[in-house]
Image (tube, rainbow, N blue to C red; front, top):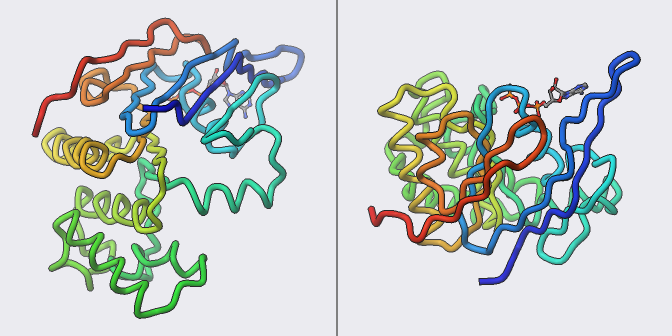
Length: 234
Ligand SMILES: Nc1ncnc2c1ncn2[C@@H]1O[C@H](COP(=O)(O)OP(=O)(O)OP(=O)(O)O)[C@@H](O)[C@H]1O
């Protein structure tokens, strides 16, 4: 499999008063297409900063982020918006569902931004909700669903535009351990069955174990980059 993400010598310095914080201190790694990669580290280690650089949400101080052959760090804002819209899906710790929309409408939302026709939007969103086993809840509002169900809706939303890459930031941070396990297995299944690339940030080593590759970050540096031979079949 080819490398879909290449990070070369990445630095991010924040200036706070007179001091400089090295949030990323010379990070290099690659992720292969179809790989589930976990970035693991304690609070303040630089995980979110790294994910923000990968997604082009923040600019690096120095270094390169190349995704699918495109230099993210060189793109302007409108190029980034269109690149993300066409290639990337996001899953967040706090779900980020719109409270006034039901499950189906939330999942279909990214397709509206792309100007897809209403009937097609509904069909695709229904298919995604079936994939996460929530077809019966399609008319439920976010506050009528459990945390695990809301996170499954947000996973369906991340996948509806058929992105090659998914970025997940502490996706189980607001879930109990049983529900977290279900969500992790679902993410594992999406990667193995659909060949998508998933980069997940977590502070939880147990969750990182679901990944094919574990990158451990301390103080903005990679201290371990471990590839597992093959994930467990589900
Ligand atoms: N906007 C900012 N301005 C100044 N310093 C920042 C900024 N954002 C992050 N930092 C610093 O950079 C370092 C890395 O932060 P980052 O949020 O990437 O860590 P993290 O591993 O994601 O932590 P957490 O798990 O708590 O979210 C920390 O020392 C943090 O204080």
